[in-house]
Amino acid sequence: MRTFLIAMFCVVFAGHAVTAESVQDQQYQMLQLDLQRLDSEAGDRGYGAIERLRFRQALESYPQVRSRDREQALAMAVILMQTADYAVKTGRLQTQLTELDSERAAILVEASRRDAELARKEADRLRLAALAREEEEAMALQGLDPAIPADSVKVLTEAQARDAELARLEEELSAQVASSGDYLSRKSLNGQPGYVVSATAFKPGKASLNGEARLALEQLAGKLKSGGKAWLIAGFTDNLGSGPANLQLSKQRAEAVLAVLKAAGIPAGKLNAKGMGSADPVASNAGKSGRAQNRRVEIIQK
Image (tube, rainbow, N blue to C red):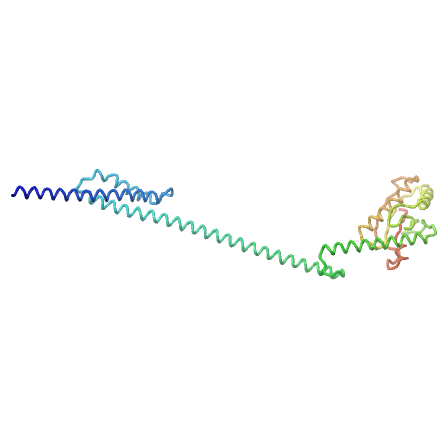
């Protein structure tokens, strides 16, 4: 009977030992799964690297631990697992906070950029508004309607210039019809001997001399070249039309007179042509008669 009891005790004790050992093995396997999970969560960032290393070393040394010490070794491994888990989670949270801070900074930068862009656009709007006001004031001073678009103002200005040119052309045509052929007259200019070529010597609105005027200038050249003097040939217009157009026409007419005198034998070095536009009027431009006098070419002794 005693032997039977001892045998039964041994079987029970052995079963208990097997059961305890089986539980420890299951717990060890679960800890290994925890290590795999932590390595996966750490990823390339290496969160909790030291803590995971200590946990891994504890698991790697577990099989060599004596049976009586395994329970304590497992308890230590669990603590190391929890420490590693905390380290990994803390690392991930810190990274997320850093990323959030970066996103916040980027949002603030973008907001600042947008504020600056809005400020720049507002400044441009105010500048354009100021320019528009200045343009309206300038147009008002010129008697133009500020409601007319800029392109229309340009067209209107060009049309007005063409109307002025046509008015001058009409006046020159009328003057030629009424002309008695006095294309060239002698006058004292700036206290020096000089000659005046009237606008009737030219084709209306052009710089081309008519035949009679050319003949008169060729005869004049015979007188001028004998004296050996230098001469300034200055062209003038009335104030009709645009300034640039008047300057160009006056210069072209002066050059046409110079060309005839040069061809008639006066050395080129003794001649100089210059366009004066509507400058230095000799009469009022308010009437046709005055404008006709202002359209001229002067041959002035230097």
